[in-house]
Image (cartoon, rainbow, N blue to C red; front, side, top):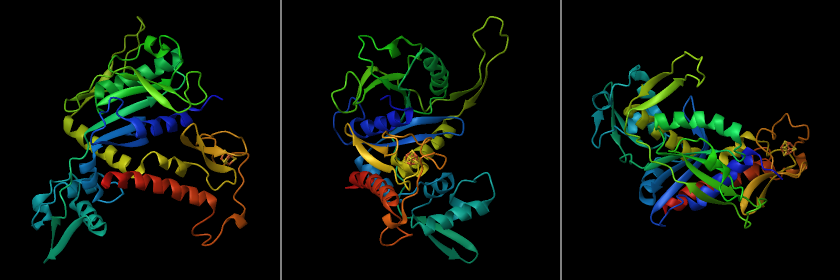
Length: 354
Ligand code: SF4
């Protein structure tokens, strides 16, 4: 059975959670894996946030939910001693009332001390916000990398390399077992790493999802000014158009990277279930070749998130008698599966905290 890109992506996430970085020496490195994150203009399939155990534990003090740009502006600049917030926070570039909203949110979440002095709000940090993100790695998943898929991907990857928002960019594709992997023959940017992935049904499989580095990436310079390619000229000789681009300054890149890491921290990769229909009677989770995948009993396959929606012709809601105690607050098996995945996501973070 050919796996969908969605299923392939879930397998890559699980492999990365077990084995990243591919050249690990087994030291104190830790990774968080998420999927479908990026900027307004570009979403990566798989994101690997590299950190270490100690700093992940420091980040954990700020709770399991992400800190958005407004909250980051407050907690990163809050002083160790009481101070009037306007004296210590940088001007946000928008009205101060939004900063006050963020201060109240931070207080409600228990990550900032506040007090009133007359009309003034003073703030004091509870903990220093850690510099917890070492590297961000972007992986583009393309199980079937034929020539036309490679051509489309090359354009995206060239943009990723020019912007250098991630520290490394990789392509993960299905291993073919051929002497020279076809991905090596495509005109992908030389800075892009290539992983070939073997899953259970493949010829070269040993039973469990595994990946091999067939081309090592070059590290991109996240501290340098990046180039955002907006439009590019075609290669045709008759094309007289010129490329359009703009620069991305290092401060923008640093802020955007932290926002991406925060979203990865909150969501992980298991949140895929939120865009599916676990409340369908046919939905379950199944272990396939060592990976846990969503499973559709009606179609006897691991379904994609696009297939598993309210528009699916085989959708049938869970029978009410499946819903036991606590219904409708706790729900039936579908709600239990969502809780299970959320628990696993939480445990994965807590493992790092211990
Ligand atoms: S029948 Fe459709 S909605 Fe139900 S689990 Fe299968 S794919 Fe999802």
